[in-house]
Length: 410
Image (tube, rainbow, N blue to C red; front, side, top):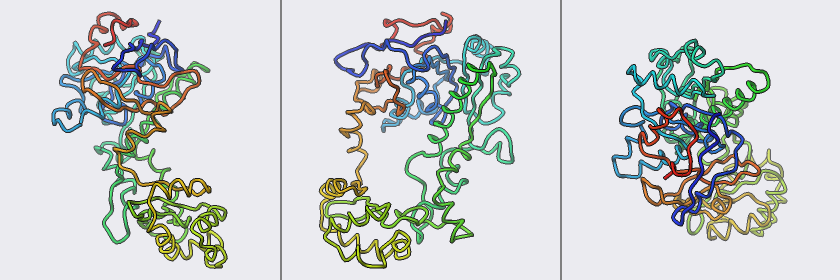
């Protein structure tokens, strides 16, 4: 019987590590996790937070994000964020002993997840036929920058490279300036969510039909749909390329839609329809903007987009961003102050919902970590247990990966 999850130990220091006795939708699913950095680890993190028994296999010395921790500059946070709720073993997959141990882990596993460059698994001796021979019910899930086939198959890929290749960089920034990467690692995490979806879909298919499918997600392909507005603009009025639009709408089809300077910072403000535009104008006692035919419809406002931006900028310049936020939201106008990450980490809404939790990490001390954005009815949000030290669960290799007890959790 596969493990049914690991109890969390309650403690005064870690109030979000309460008794983990409820089962999640993926409880009983055993996942062997060979992933590294962001893309794959986020997919397996989501599985772990849904109750799956995720066994993270690291090479000697640990995976890349663990080795980044040596700089002392907070590089441990990504590793802590993406590896909560997993077991940790260390295997040298280039050695006969390590390969043999992996075979034993795979014999009763449900899913194998990896995000190596295409061809690495085959060179290690674990191609699809071998995996099927080891365990016919094993779902083999892989993710890479450009996929396992096609002209770009062997290109190395990190988030920045995929942002460049996919067009994300070309549409980010201001038209008079060079292209700029998106601040977050959007290609990695977008692919991670798609990988999670592909795996769980394959598990459902196996449950319903008995068919075992391999699944893969390419970062290059996963990010393309996010460019919908930019592609629309290019298909309409800019046939050769989609221009960089700064903080304006990527498709230049909504106005106002921008980040405006306030007395004490900046606010993002947009009006997605005539009702919101009129509410915005009334809030600033600018009735003439409602009656002016140049701004009567969205089409008109987009046609005069620069004029609209100057007008709204004049309206907000002498207001504080928090006052604007509260006032405009109250009358139904989408608005948000531009906040620093230090403010977001203590956001009352995220903490009230259990989306973020403060805890005393056994390796890194006080940290703020995200839980899963996927909320399951009847399942408490929290961290099952924090990420652990390299090889901390090595005994599971000799114990046949038996379910652990509360005494096994730090």
